[in-house]
Amino acid sequence: MLPLKNMPSPNFNSRDGAVVSALVLHYTGMQSSQDALDILCDRQAQVSAHYVVDEDGTIYSLVDEADCAWHAGVSYWRGSKNINNISIGIEIVNPGHRLGYRRFPQVQMDTMAELCSGIIGRHAIKPVNVVGHSDVAPLRKIDPGELFDWKWLAGKGIGLWPVIRNQKSEIRSQESEIIVNLAEYGYEKPKNDEELSKTIAAFQRHFRPSNVNGVWDGKCLLRCLQWCSFPPPDGRMVARRSSVRGEGGRKVRASRKAVAGNARLGKPKGKCYRKYTACYTLASKGEKVR
Ligand SMILES: [Zn+2]
Image (cartoon, rainbow, N blue to C red; front, side):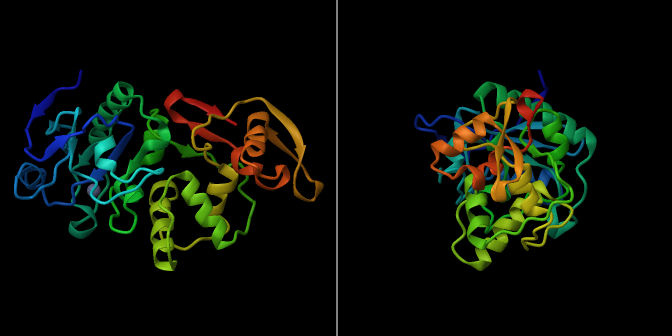
């Protein structure tokens, strides 16, 4: 059991029966942890989170998990709009991009990971629903940012991390396909070029932090989306495979579940199944599914 310091915030409301299904990670974006705690507990500020994790690993408990804390604001993920109502929010102390963005100390990451594991277990949160504020509000927010180590976290069984299979592949994609891919993973559909760029940047911050530029490049980003693949909305990949014919008659391998999934979705076998076939880490189980 992690030691928690109680720091009750008045900024919460009842979930009105909504079930918790997501975990949203933030950075505080303030000079010090005390500054952040002051704001998060100030009734006038109307913001809060369930927990704050300080750089030295101290965890503050502000709002009961049963209640709805006010951390995500206007938000969207996988068809849900009021993310506050269905999520647990953790503020991780870091000055953020405005005040001197810096790496998250290991001791902070370690205690935060332990806290996350407990939350995920208590609420049976799916790996795909462990997200950053920038994922659920890509047009407004950039936290916890590209220095936050999602890959390390996925290795601890928290969230997803794509595994690159084919380093050399370069696949081109139409803008409409990019939007479909982002939306299928969970992002709100961008309505114009500016929104698309910000949504791609949010994706990059989470899944390809080495180059966050909001520009779709066929080499890396697309590889993440199409070759590395993500799980279908509610499905799970299986390890068993069968050979099928891909585009142009090229022999490629796909999981039986993936082929069946495409058939179920009315997608042509040779065209779309790759999205559901390649590997990704089902981090919550600690197993690699291909
Ligand atoms: Zn935030």
